[in-house]
Image (tube, rainbow, N blue to C red; front, side, top):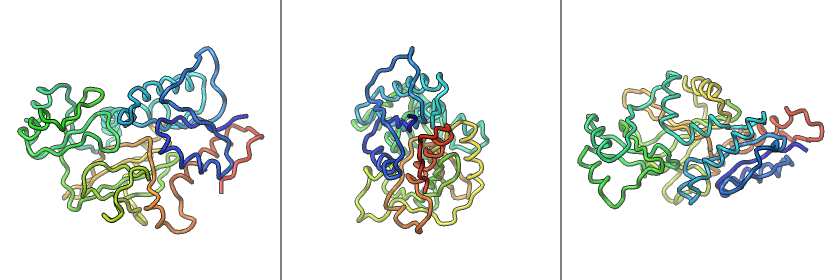
Length: 314
């Protein structure tokens, strides 16, 4: 019998989705990408596959899970299986350079960015920035490796200091620091390639902006994530087209607005999570993250025309 296959690396982030699939009585199986094996001479099981591979896998001791996950997806796609967030999404998830190149191709503005490889190259690139700039890992996730530097001297001290974290793929990005009038960024969530809602994210305490419940901060600090009622922006249509062009079905895309009112897109998360505390303030009946994802996966399963499947979408 066809079912929904969840490809994952982080069990904490996946558990809420599995609970929602159970609630809807949608048949599903899990594929742990932290280890495994498959036979390329055998066709994979039928069904709908949803990849939840994360760029931050290495930070949890799963250094090669993304590479193994990509191998599994290549096998699945080679056999014509329906993969949600397939090989192109994995490429975008694991490389901010790939993200920025695709965004530029789509005509979506990104901050000036210089990929570097090696200490001296990073210092040389830093000399080309007129003001403060940030460094970030090409393969990051959760804001890991993101630091603000006032000048070349500050970057050099950080590179030579005890807090320096080498990027897992060897590529360190230097990027213009976009000064927002107020300390927040906006994240737009998309499910099935369609806009779900916008989230205002407080950046007062830094760059680690993971929305998952497992990443929750001290509630005494106030809400970090707030869903924006009635959000409207030309970016919605631009992002929807971008996701369609890049064969990405589920994603969160982040942008920041500078003092002149210009929006700069700087991150695409194809392994998106949803903040329960923020969604608790939604009106009854409003679309929520995991319920929308489960409903979308259910519709995809129905589209396989398997009469044995009873899909409960409500």
